[in-house]
Amino acid sequence: MLEPDIPATEAADAAEVDAAPVPENWVRNVVLFLGGQTVSLFGSMLVQYAVMWYLTLTTKEGTVLALATIFGFVPQAVISIFGGVWADRHNRKYLVMGADAAIAVATLALAVLMLRGSGDLWLIYAVMAVRSAGAGIQTPAVGALVPQIVPASQLLRINGLNQSIQAGMMLLAPAIAAILYANLEIGSILFIDVATAVIGIGFLALVPVPTLRRTAGQERPAYFADLVGGVRYISGHRLVRWLLGLFFVVMLLGGAPSFLTPLMVARTFGEEMWKLTALELAFSIGMMIAGATIGWWGARTGRIQLILIGSVAFAVCTLGLGLSPVLWVFLVFMFLFGLAVPAFSTPSTTIIQEVVPMERQGRVFGFLGIVGAVSMPLGVGVFGPLADVWSVQVVLVIAGGLTFVALALALLTPTGRWALAQSRVRDSALAYGASPEPAPGR
Image (tube, rainbow, N blue to C red; front, top):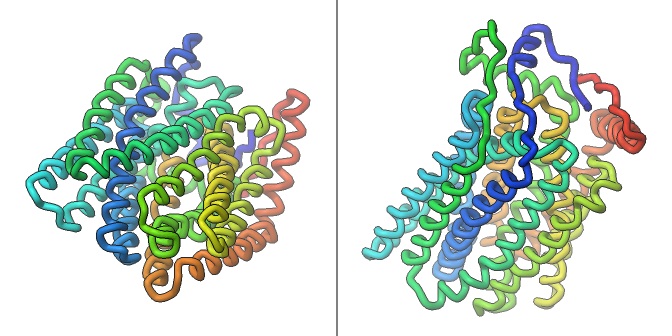
């Protein structure tokens, strides 16, 4: 396990929690957990596609899409500051269930208002902000919950399977969303998300997830002390620090411009609904194939190497999307973009679950959520308005080129070279069934 040297002031916090062993019936619990998350995710994706298509086709403005993305991510960044600490202090299952319930209530309110004729943009932005805040609670809780119900040896496989299921929902949801969007008012579509959220909460309620308990004789640190302890841990763990930095760069330059692809389709290739649907299908099929198989081929490749392969693929695909002369070439690059997602995100998640102590994972995943929630709106806040000045193609080419430059700089830094070296040591040790020596944190 790649573990940093923890400062003495944090030593107690590092050993304060009794982590219950994964139960023997973990397969049942994982099936229930993934089943509930799948149903809930399906409803959320229907709303996501319907709302984004509604904004795209009714306004055709990059600024509107940029604002939608900002309202969809900034609240998550703010709440994740607290959500990570909550995930380390409270039962993670109840946090996920509570966030799902709050999102369902907000969506229900928007559905009723839109059916009554209130379709103002600020209402949509407000509900997107509530949904984003809920994600700020859910994301660190879910990431830290998985190691409590999954054996360590199965983390990469289950994380990949989870991404494959998500991709499957992304494959199914746009087709169904297109049918619903063509035949129902958007307000009616929102009710589906409310129903699936209730089902997802019910499934998760059946999964036993213990609350991490402090060791007898130890006092629970104050909330602020827990927050500061998480910041110190991340800043002192060289691998986690570098990984979060790389994640920020990829999401800023490689991920954010991808939100402009529906706008490029509408402007360049036509506004037919089947073209927007094909865009999502191409991405989802690629992601589903890679997620379903990463447990097999990912185990034969180093975690860091996988992350770097995925990062380079993001840069190549972003360039390719911008340079696509016809729709079918554009769709091929979206398919490849989907293949790259599990290669990057699955090993990133697995590394955190493997190297970070369970009692700290909520805070680390919380900061991971902050990085993603800040980088996305920041990138779209820049690239979205530029897409109203230049063509989307030019914006994508610029973003792809900058991604290559940023990745080169990340690998040339001492920390980048160190991460690659540590990855080789770790993978070599695991290949022989041994545990690698802890790496220094600084």
